[in-house]
Length: 345
Ligand SMILES: Cc1cc2nc3c(=O)[nH]c(=O)nc-3n(C[C@H](O)[C@H](O)[C@H](O)COP(=O)(O)O)c2cc1C
Image (tube, rainbow, N blue to C red; front, side, top):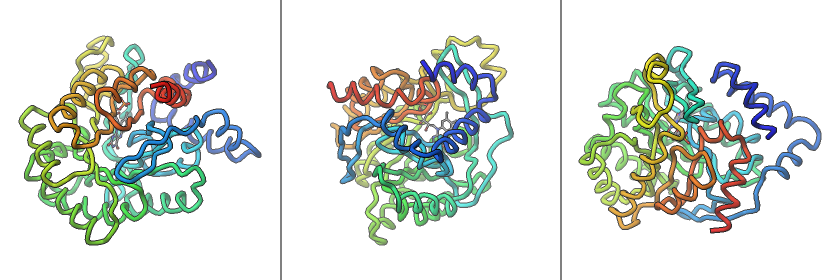
């Protein structure tokens, strides 16, 4: 109720500005006496622990990558009840991303289109922020680090960018996600080809053991993969004993949207997220779960707007789920609603 009023106001602002405005206001509120305790009391659900790859998640509801790219709001976000928060995508060098505007709402569809382009402060700064948060993290929220390559790095050298990011982010976070599935960095999705991917992942798995980080490594895939490429990835994941898959990133498809075609076309390129992605994402989760005999843990991401959507993702084979667009449209109460339904399962 309160959030729907606030959303009316926020949706009058440019989408990206509204995002930072909301988070900055929350930061200021949290500085008031007793504010943190009150917010925690209102929003944090009772624990419903889930264990994955040796990590204890307070609950299965995570914040997907891209919301807190620079790990600037971990204190505030951890008060809202998330079981885990994924920061990034970070790249070795800071980069400003694509020209603005680059984030658009499709309210009729409870969806977003973004072409942010990995705008971030660079892995070094972000890893330092995570370390500081972790030192005083009373809520024990699990933090994942999502890594990518700089726009200027040619694909043949991409593995070096992932190496640089991994060596910085792995010591700071609880798990690491290799993102080769964003549609907003030219050529990035080509890294989902088996040989390219093997070069990156096998190297990180080697470094993980050599440096004794032993951090789970997950791969985030696109919902637009063709059948051959998807099956190749699944075979590779089993072969190299990947710790898990995040299914999935945003889509380049514009199917299942109620918004007028002219409006969508006018927005232009970018990844679509939110409700129109739900069925495609759930089908993909089910396919992967069946095809691998549940050998590869799945984190389900894409289109969760209601608690029921999240439970469906779990029933299709996800161990954990992540939200982003649904969090923008429904507000923080979505987290406790999902958790309530999860406890009733
Ligand atoms: C504005 C925006 C920025 C995003 N940035 C990233 C990113 O940097 N890295 C990434 O792996 N996914 C990114 N995503 C994708 C989300 O993490 C998520 O996988 C996707 O939006 C589907 O979930 P949803 O339908 O709940 O939003 C971004 C999504 C949005 C809307």
